[in-house]
Image (tube, rainbow, N blue to C red):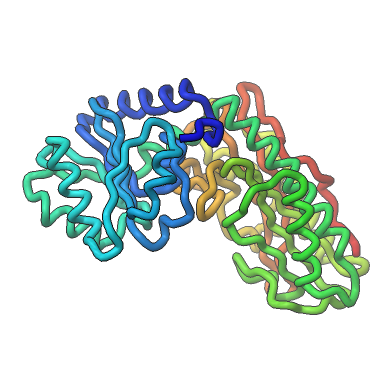
Amino acid sequence: MADSWLPFDATEYERRQQALRARMDERSLDVVLLSGPENQYYLTGYETTGFHSFPQTLIFPRTAPPLLVTRRLEEGNAAAAYALACRSYRDDEDPADALAQALRDLGIADRTIGVEKAVPWLTVRLFEGLAHKLPSAKLVDVSGLVELMRAVKSPAEITYMREAAAAVAAGMRAGLAAVRDGVNEREIAAAVFPARILAGSHFVRNPTYITAGPRSALAHATWLGKTLERGDVVFFELGANVRHYDAALIRTAVVGPPTAELRRAADASIAGLAAAIETVRAGIPASEVYRATRDAIAKEGCAQFFLHRAGYGIGIEFLTWIERGGVSLDAGAMSILQPNMTLHLVPYLLLPGLGSVGFSETVCVTESGCEVLTTYPRLLTEG
């Protein structure tokens, strides 16, 4: 079908597929069954938002071309992907039957088969059905196998993320400009969306977090329609994506002049972010970034408000921009940072009764440090 719809050329897809086969060879895997839409997209360019209702599985043999087993409605999307054969099932058929039969037809139903147990789209029903129908197969967990490949970006992927960074900055600029006494949260959100889209963002599936007042201290909360009052904290965590590649950005505003407590928290978050950026470089354990962030926040007297990791890998978005199963910047993280890994650094603070206060950046790891992809002033905005 139309090759121009694909985000990358054939060379990029062939390189990725060859790299996965090499990893499979190292682990003596005959085939892997990929249930995550991000991994399917990464390897073949196959994209749909229909992954949430009907299981779809990319059969990726070590010595044969990939085959997608999906709902009949999605056949056209498979045809638009890179060199992807498809076997479909009707809505009234059991997806496990279709998947098991495809494996039998390929002659690999009794081999060592990798499955993604940590991916929510491998449902319990599908996994149990497959295990029942293929009693001779050896099913092993390969969660993270493709995610760790995805963590290191190609130049073409980073180009998309730079474009996304420009779009998210435009959305942030519009949202912060809308903050003032008497404005409704919905009006702020309504300013963000067109600005982000007109600056080049495609559809963003990850929630857009915009909340005001004490309710913003709830993790992952978004707007309900509060009218802003003087003293309200307004928390923004926005993303934008270009061809499913995301950049994310956190900033904080206040209606009127900030209190001393709010100013101190904002300074602590900014200090934590600066420490993280200063620490990130190829060759260090991910946990070092966490420790540097935590220590900088503690130095500002706000350690008790820093409750989570310092960041995570960011890239392909279908449900969230977080690269689940990839790099996590937490206290126990042993992953070694590599050049061209992309990270969202998130030293934000939760202050009960006041709100969330935070500043973040999306960065790309280099040999000597990192490139900050997002560009917006790190200032507590007074509206």
